[in-house]
Image (cartoon, rainbow, N blue to C red; front, top):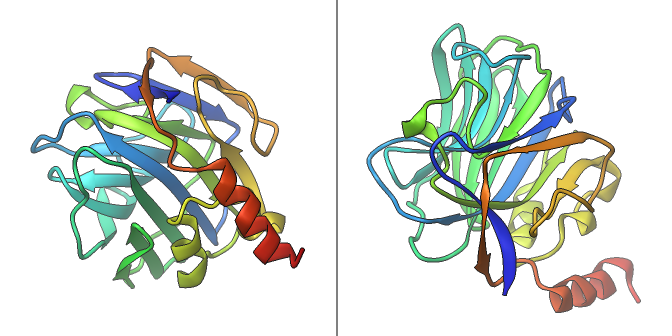
Length: 226
């Protein structure tokens, strides 16, 4: 068992500066719900300094169980929804891919891709938050564990997303484009990228890790041909 951060009420972890500021980029995280209700669950948010309810990107759940990647511009939502709901009582792998102003995707557990091809404007990105957004309220929090958060300054392919969902470390998927990665296994250290992280209230809960050390080794052998 491993300790992970659990995000309840207004809990969140801030990451500054924001790991990416321009498209394309991809965001991935593992999510273990503590409970599910009829509200939104914000897992990872990229947003302006101080937070802005009208301008941000969200990797999130809408109305309880449907993962989505959302570009919110001038209070309008351009959203890619997955075709399948998450599973309670277990880890779920969720990915959002922002390719261009008119192209974005959401994935659940390696597939179930949802597409959105509507236009969205550019958003000034200064900070990333995990577990809620800076301007979030009690009903918007993740209400669960968010871990192994990774950000690439590139578009992940369907095959990349499928590989990540098997429990492979993000460090083995497009490593040259991986700009941020934190396991968030009991602390804010480790991973990839030099950023300032601060925990704002998240406590710890013990779970089995979705990213296994033996999977890292076996997949490294396949990837690197050793």
